[in-house]
Amino acid sequence: HNNSSNSNNNSSNDKQDSDENDGEALAVSAASALFAKAKEVVEASGLVGCWQWRPLVDGKRLREDPFNVPQGKRIGLLIQRQLQWRFQDPNMDAATVEKRLLDSED
Image 1 (cartoon, one colour):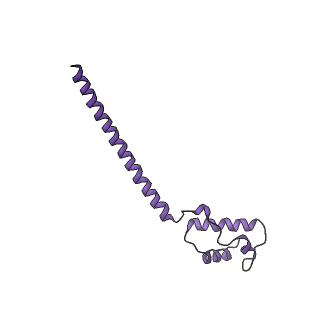
Image 2 (cartoon, rainbow, N blue to C red):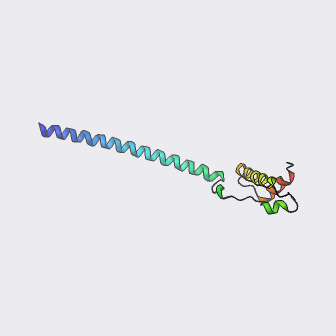
């Protein structure tokens, strides 16, 4: 009788282990699917590597024709503004940035 009880306990434990493994596999599968979707969204956004972006029109060029911005805080503001524009439109090119800079009054 004792052997039968142990056998029942073992098969009960095996079933519980199997259920836990199935639950873990489902959780891993769901997490993997969420990660794949998040990766797809980030890659489609055009923002991959944005932390390394440099302004398309740097401070030196802002001081030259046709911008003629005097040395000072305005240079930093215009550099920051360029990066904000690119976050909004990661495909923005230098010509578009230059036009926006020339059109901006402040």
